[in-house]
Amino acid sequence: MKPLSPIAFLREHAVLAVSAVAAVASMVAVPPDSAYWGYFDWKTLGCLFCVLAVASALRLMGAFDRAARTVIARFGSPRSLALALVLTTAALSCVATNDMALIMMLPLSAATLVGAGRARLIPAVFVLQSLAANLCGMIVPFGNPQNLYLYSYYGLHLGDFLRTMALPFTVSVVGVVAATWWLAGRPGRKKASAEATRGITTAKAPASSTPAARAAIGAAAEPATAPVPRRPMPLSRRRLGAYGVLLALTLLAVFRVLPIAVAVAAVAATLAALDRRALAAVDWSLLATFACFFVFAGNLARIPELAAWLGPLMDDHGLVISAGASQVISNVPAAVLLSHFTDAWQPLLVGVNIGGAGTLVGSLASLITLQHFTSVRKVFPQTRDVPELSTGRFLGLFTLLNVAFLVILLVVCGLCG
Image 1 (cartoon, rainbow, N blue to C red):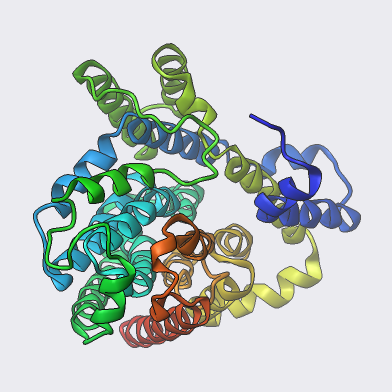
Image 2 (cartoon, rainbow, N blue to C red):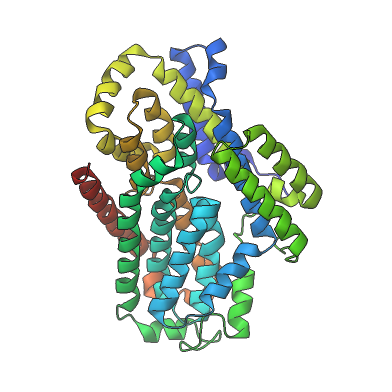
């Protein structure tokens, strides 16, 4: 693989670059000393590594792809197909983190909708998949990176976590299903969409019922920038069983039943023996970004003036401050930073999760959605004449739905305490 140029590397890892600059800048206020070592939450980093590594292994062997196709192949109408794509993304976000769910499902969704003659639905489905990945994964500690961190940082119990997230999760699921049902049922320019997708399949065919559609799905099953070979390993029972054990060990480590060092060692050793591609496919930049966040947040927490100002704000308006900060610096760094200024974990946990809606920056997973959407016309040239696939319309729909979800969730969660 050709190494990236410095500019290309910065473009691809912009978040890591910004977090590294922020960490270095914070060192001016708080010079490095022995306290730096205590900044790092090694349990969070270990759990995140295990989740990303096991999810990568399952993705590379085709387990997620086959499960998604099995679900999607059962639906043919626009509404049922859109619901299948969106809810499958929501389910995957609960076991493979939100960004991994989108990386797996967005290319598959684009190929499925184009192959079924439903290209006009791509913007709505992509936006709803982004919302589903960001909001529906909140119900489990390992559904989002910020959840893993806060669950470990505050030493939460699973029952307390589930009770806190039950209301925003329920509102989010109901909202996502309702929005999908409404948007997928709206009359569109069927003629333009059908003409744009002519030569692949007919609009009446089920999503994966034609050879061309299946070929399109296979061609787009992984993102174009994947750092590993595209051809997945055969789905062997031996590997599937081994990865199932690794997933169980990871969950035991997340819930503090098993020492994280044991889980990390087991995952690393097993994948090194069975599939080294999975280790190469781990999002190492995300782990490095977390490390930079820890340094940045740890240094800011040692600035007395900032603590005196931000602490009372979090005590009085934790939910709004957490959600608002997420709109500016994204929900993961917001969680790491604000956790140093409050002991009230409930409003912080809810705030950074619902803060995943709103602006494109609210959750870094939303940027993955935008990146995949802008590549649709390149991957599928036959969709260039579909007016619904303009970036401007996509951003308008994204902003409208995300702001609506953010406002509704803030009002409901605020009123219910």
